Image (cartoon, rainbow, N blue to C red; front, side):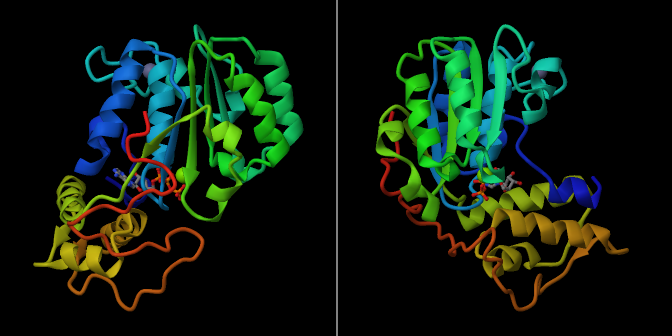
Length: 273
Ligand SMILES: Nc1ncnc2c1ncn2[C@@H]1O[C@H](COP(=O)(O)OP(=O)(O)OP(=O)(O)O)[C@@H](O)[C@H]1O
Ligand SMILES: [Mg+2]
Ligand SMILES: [Zn+2]
């Protein structure tokens, strides 16, 4: 694996979403995807908890021409899988796919246009990433799409930070909240050790544990450090793994994950199905 492949690592299979606390949510989505049930999940959780990765996986599974019949994993290489991006919105068969990156600025007119064209259309697979970033009038327009929905997929993600309050209640009421949690420190250590092994990165004794602790269990930053180690000529993760750490306010103001109870994703229930 190249350093960039390590840094950009993402789950490509449902089983690759780490964390025992996430198993019930993942299995529920997997089951629905396998049956192509009508599905309207809202993936909620703190920063960097695989909301977007899992939402993409579900979307691809619905759009894939040859998903695994048992696991519902998308093949990752057919037209349906590769078409799941904003540039190819509206293409695909039997389901048309739509990706809206609301964090990148999706306006009311775009959403109203989509709703006008596709209200009462049950053959869409739609992803609204960071739906809380949508302006309120756009969210209200979406209610008219969601109310009569009888088929296909509408998956959205919401980070439990300031934007969570911006999601209008009538939209929340039409979605099924699915909580995602940070993996425990031990789960993250085990994952990183495996990935380092596959990537040919050597590890000094205790370095991975040190990394997870110092980075407060931030999945993204751990991948970044591992990628940096792979860039060095000795491809070794040293102890201590990172120096004084300054949190990046943009992406990951996360807390130390314990092996105890995961963070509750208030105001949503953990199994709100
Ligand atoms: N439980 C997990 N299992 C596997 N990978 C994870 C998990 N949590 C985070 N990651 C990894 O962390 C990175 C960030 O994930 P992703 O962007 O999907 O999270 P997010 O919840 O959408 O983040 P944000 O809150 O910033 O939108 C990805 O590389 C992803 O693979
Ligand atoms: Mg995201
Ligand atoms: Zn495919």
